[in-house]
Length: 491
Image (tube, rainbow, N blue to C red):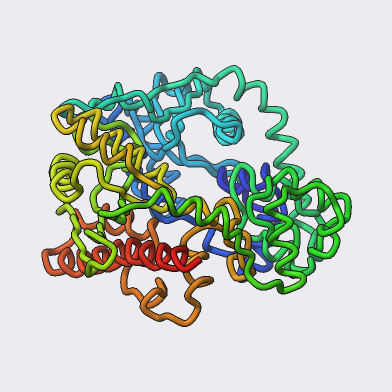
C-alpha cells in the first residue's frame, strides 16, 4: 500500500525524511516544545484574512478529506471564481490550496498564504507539490503565487488587506521543480517502507528551515553535556566540531574552535570551579549606577495583523511595565506598574504614565536594555510631544546584563547563559520568591505576550485573573533586577 503524501508531509521530507518515519513509528519521541502555538495561531489568522483578497469566496469546510475533495470538485465544476482551502487528491497525494482562482473548467491560479514577510525556499517546495497534484488531475496551473505580509505596511484607519499583503509570482520556479517533485515522492515512499529505523545522521537540516522536535531523540547517544549544549556557539560551529569528532566537553576543552566565554562554560562544567568574579570590572560597572535608581521592565506583543493606527506588522507593541525604584540608598523599595486593558491601543497611556513615573535625569536600569530602549524610541517617534522626556529616560538606562554577558560574574549553574532566567536561580538557588516556576498563569515573556493577545476574547472575570498573573510576572522581573543589583553591590 502506497504511503499517502500530503503537502505538509512532503515539506517535512524535504527537510528530513526521517521526520516522517519517526512520526509514524515513534511519535512519542517528538518534543512538542518546538511547536509554537502563537505562531500557529498567527498563521491561521493571516490565512483567514487572506481569503478575502480577491473578493467573495467560498471556503471548503475542514473535516472528512473525502467530503473536502468532493466539495471542491463541485465548486470547480460550477466555475466558482474563488475557493479557499480547495482540496485535491490523486494517487495518494493530497493538498489543500489556500486560495484557488478558477479561470475555466481546467485553468486555475494557485495562491499559497504565508504569515512571513518574505519568500523562503521551502515555500517553493510547498507550492511545487500543489502544482504537481493539480497537474496530475488535468488542471492547467496558469500561475502559482506566494501571498505574504508586507512588512512596510502601516495601518491608518481600516485595515487595507491589499496593502497588507504582497503577492509574488513563483510560477517559473514551481514549474521547473515538477520533475523533482515526482522523484521526491517516489523517494519518500521508498524511504517509508523501511522497517528498521533509518540511520540518517544529524546535521544543519535539524534546525532549518524549522527546528525539529526529534533532535533530542536523534542525538540521544551523545555524551551529556555535549557541543549542542554550548551557549552562544553558532550552529555551523557546533556541527563543524561534531563532524570532527569533537563532541564531549572534555574534547571541546582541548580544541580551539570556540570563544573564551564558551570555554568558561566548559571549564566550570568539567572542573566545578567556584564562581568566577572579576571584581575590578564589576566595581567599575557599578559606578555607572546612581540614585535615584529605577528598575524597568517592559512586556510587549507582536500582532502580525496591525491592530492600531500607525503600527506595522509584527511591531513590538508595549502593553505593560513594572517599575521598582529607590529614591536614595537607604530608601524603602517602592513599586509602580502599568497594564493596559485589551481592545485599545495601549501606547499613549503607557508612554504618559512612564513619563510621570520616571523623573528626568535619573538612573534607570534594565536587563538587556536594547529591548527597552527600542520600545522607548518607538514611542518617542509616534508621540513627539513626549519625545524629550522619553529620550531622557532612554539616554539614562544602564544594562544590568553586562556583567553576566561579559562573564565578569559566572558560575556553573548559569549553563553558559546570561539570561536572567538562568542568572537569577544561579545567584539565589534556594529563594522560592524568585522562582518563576512558582508563578501562576504566566511564567515567561512568551506566555505574557500570548496572554495579553488572548485577553480580547476573555470574559471580564478571566481578564481580571489574567491581569493578576501578568502583574505578578512583570513585577517579579523588576524585583529580580533589584536582587541582582544587590548581589553585584556586595562585590
